[in-house]
Image 1 (tube, rainbow, N blue to C red):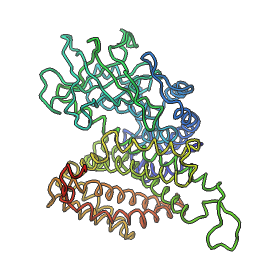
Image 2: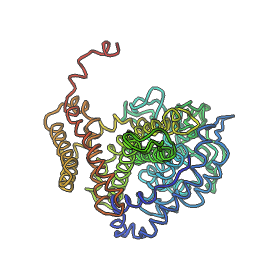
Image 3: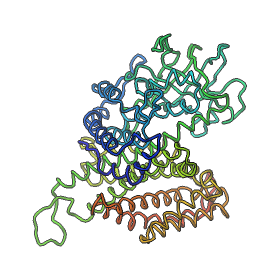
Image 4: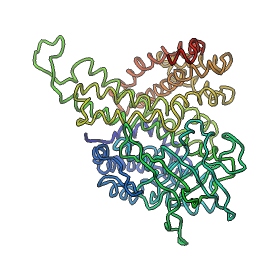
Length: 569
């Protein structure tokens, strides 16, 4: 159950797909020389393998524990997190004005990819902090930035996102948590939030909660939501943590996976003394929260890559070591390692193609985000369209690859002691949180497809078709995607678009991932192995995706052929 960072493939994706050398040509990212990039990628890979990976097994076995209002983690987590903070890994892309290194988001994405592959549950701690930093950096006041950003960027303090309530899941507008003015510019926060990742723990000196709540005069629905910063500890005059705020972790959820990530039920204002500050303006909380969620959705898409990489490594080792049976048709009747059998090779090749394709999509998206940060509007629009593809398809392949890993282990894969089952259990949350994959697909066809009257998505698909003209499977898939997009824009009803949104999202994601793998193969640095993976992806994975066109254009009528009672049956 050891982990080795896939440094060479990451560097290839960062160079070819993210275009890191082009980014370094801009003043803002001029310090991102390729020598420095190599040092960062190699360094975080070694750190993740040495510090986070050894805690993965004990974290899954023992999990987070709640006692007397305090959440604790197994032995070793505290020291590993302190080392992470002290070595500066949390500050890679942070604003230099607040102690960050100011490097591209692409490199911060690489930090989280390695941490998550080593220990997905643990990596959620810094991942949520990244989102809090984004929200405060874009929407916080100067005073809030001065108060919170430096310690969040360093990782000394951690951040959370508090959206969900028992009656308000995907329908955020139904939330009831209240915010009442206290007369001094602060607000009294009262309510309950559920599914709060790392909402309480003892690894960071303070936990900075970003909480969605409704003021007394707020309009109904999502238009009446505001965002508040609510620290676990009030701040003393020197900015250090002081007395505890009126908030607490009521319980921890008992989950299928990510056992070492405390998923908390949080209660705010039991004694009517929970104090928070408004972030931005009243009734504009969703805008601020979506800034946070956009970053989180990229990093959750990365979790699909992370868990796929870990499952692939373990399955490949097992297949190379497990001797079982004679190779079919071989004159030599000696037993061989199962990696020699065609069906095991099929599964391993698929695992590798999906993992490397999703990684290529991750870094292509990250590079577009960085160009958007440089003020390149077309890149930002393209990044916006890529995010739902990455989040949805990336997490779907995480589940598929983890499932194939169990299959390669055979009966031993179903036994917890091998560790293969943990990857499948951990992977299953990623298609659900930060907006279910159905919501991602709906976002693609209802909002992102409308960018520039469909021009942003169709320009992307046209570029793929041109660049992959010599790869008929990918060129044809891109043309199929364009045909579906045109139908959705010009002819389909809203119900029809939504009914076909998931297959369309998958088709587009596969087209982009296959294209980016072809770019890697043409670069040549990946050698014959990369060429073989890119060819397999185009022939098999893209070929399968073309078969989704009929489903994408089938319309909604068949989904409503049964009334709700008959469907529930």
